[in-house]
Amino acid sequence: WTKMKKLILALIILGFYSYSFAGKINKYLDIIPNLGLNFSEIKGDYNVGTIKGHLGAHAGINLRIGNRIYVNTGVNFYRTSNEISEINMNTSQISRWENTETYLRIPALAGYKLIKIGKDNQFNLRVEGGICIQLLQNFKSVSNTGSKPFTQDDLKNSNVNAVIGAGFDIFNITCDVHYQAGIGKAFESSRPNLNEIRHNVIQVSLGFKIFN
Image 1 (spheres, rainbow, N blue to C red):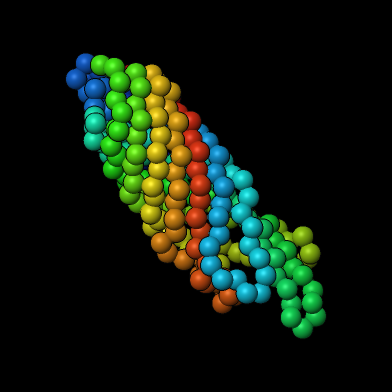
Image 2: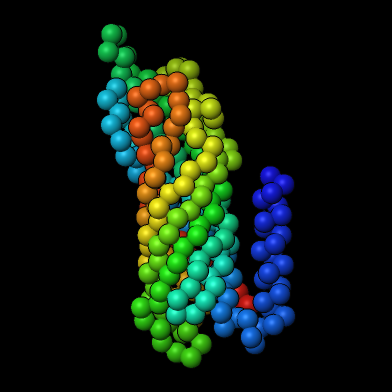
């Protein structure tokens, strides 16, 4: 938590710095608070049941550095959820869990503006890709059938994921769609059937460029 506060403070300081030198820096630096929705897509062979992803939400602040070619980074908090169902082969009893995870997500993406209209970037059409680091901040598990819930120890505390996406800017408004593919395994559980599962996420974000 202390490291997160320092990182957010550094982004705020950088924002005021860009505002103070708007004439020179803002041409190459966009500070973009954003929020949006995400949908979990679970990949892997789970042969004793099913895992279904649910709709979640995220919010944060991004830094886009560059002009036609740029780097996109920042800090985003996002909450995602899933439902796990297991079938006991001996008793045919079905157990269900609703799991909710909160992550700190730090992207490191490179992008290119395919279309760039206007001296002050009134319209941009962009593509980008790279990696993101996600750090588990909070986890909650509730069983609808009285079964023993999952714990935070069942999940990996950190993951590196591949990201591809596209977006557009209209004046100060930005819209982005990203697909995040889990490179590493999502679980490190005592339940061996989960340990090959990978966690993918589709994200849609809306942002606003400040100090621009």
